[in-house]
Length: 248
Ligand SMILES: [Cu+2]
Image (cartoon, rainbow, N blue to C red):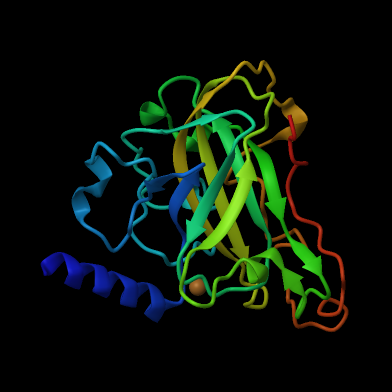
């Protein structure tokens, strides 16, 4: 009973604040539960935990916030999601409500065990990104709008781990940037630990790498944007900031 009550309160809290984040991951038919910011405190040390911790679904508002890497507090996960290079990983969001802005999936080599890896020093590369699919910046079909499952089911964001990526231990970082507040971007990042298997030998070069924070600033027109302003609202292209996606 206590469990059911806690779960219900958690759901209400998500909805009341109209924010969210990556709640679960799937690889093939296997589900991996993420960290629930409104769940029990012992999740962070539970042996099944694959996601770095985040204690609130409130977004980050500063492009230079240290927690932009893996949210706050971003404590390491206890285990990792096994995946073979070339496979899809799907991040599942619940009660997502925002509809404007890019979504970017990043990875970083932990150089060893991700449990002792500091995300602040990570070199991140993009494995996928999704932006404005059709129409205008203000009212068009962004992936962020298209993927919302308005009936309350999970909203699914699939990306592929590049098939040539060399095996190893990686962070995967799912980032939604919501741009519905004029000149006040909102970042929603979550990180999970991956163990990549396969026979690949590939790894992206420097031109694909970025630091987080570092890759964004309020000097960028794609970040410091008023989507309702004349000359912006009716544009039909939006350039997603950061380095190019590494396809492997
Ligand atoms: Cu929100």
